[in-house]
Image (cartoon, rainbow, N blue to C red; front, side):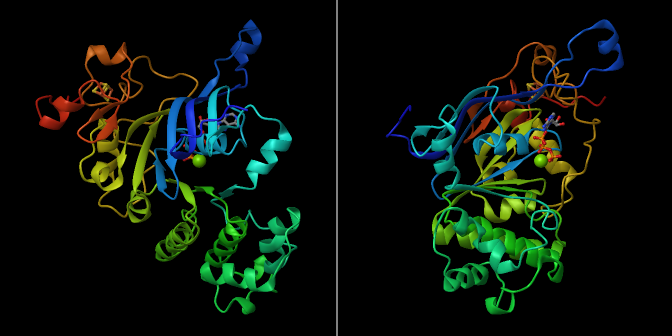
Length: 339
Ligand SMILES: Nc1ncnc2c1ncn2[C@@H]1O[C@H](COP(=O)(O)OP(=O)(O)OP(=O)(O)O)[C@@H](O)[C@H]1O
Ligand code: SF4
Ligand SMILES: [Mg+2]
């Protein structure tokens, strides 16, 4: 097993790539051509520090969920590496991987689909303990339910999921994910199916566990307000690549990549979700990624070089940005095209 004892990060992905096979179209079927792969994640470097909440934002189809699943090795990378606590884990055997899995968890978007309807709350939350041969103590269950905001916990232990509201179910799902005290959790749109009035409270639960257990979170969200409320760092993805990464407030106050700027401009104010489409049409297909800068088909600043040369992520005014003209755009010396 490859070991890097000096790693300051809890989790990292190196040049992570996931290409899915796509189904053949009728023409491809007739001509025997192989369809192009779906390039869901395409060479992403990501690092998550111990105890931090990193927000991952981007439009639908940009590869956020796939990246989260790759880091948990729920999805096998096409290429690239996954490191956890100083050890490379994408190439280890299933037994070793099982031991790592215990230290990582996922919280899903749908509080209705993610709980077994036949089990009581006490059974749902204690299941990870039982599976791992750990004694189930009622006090511990009660403590985790209480921290999740189900108070008094005794009132909830014997209930079934159908007796709970959406918010209460998500609190149970969070208690279940946290009961093994994981070091790393991927929370995939954990509040997007909940009433807006509840979102802040549920995010508060995530923040509480983050502080109590020093758990690192990758928080996937469409909602920039969600990112602003709990994350210290933000990563913006576009078509399988990271286009901007930096301190959350810095990125949201002064976005440097034209894509991040567009995302922010279509949200009336912090507090809104991203719309399905941005002003310049839909996100291109991950089967047919534009050449050069993959944002050039929708970018108001695009120049000819943008369609031929792919920009690398580089440090611009405190954030990492992949745009050939980030400095000029920031200083206002490059104008937007009006087409
Ligand atoms: N199992 C799969 N098989 C084939 N294609 C997939 C699979 N999972 C994801 N994709 C494709 O990979 C791309 C990225 O998908 P992903 O779900 O990671 O995006 P996302 O950013 O999480 O989107 P959303 O915000 O809608 O959840 C999309 O084009 C999607 O259709
Ligand atoms: S590299 Fe060109 S197309 Fe890409 S974001 Fe920058 S200006 Fe726009
Ligand atoms: Mg997703």
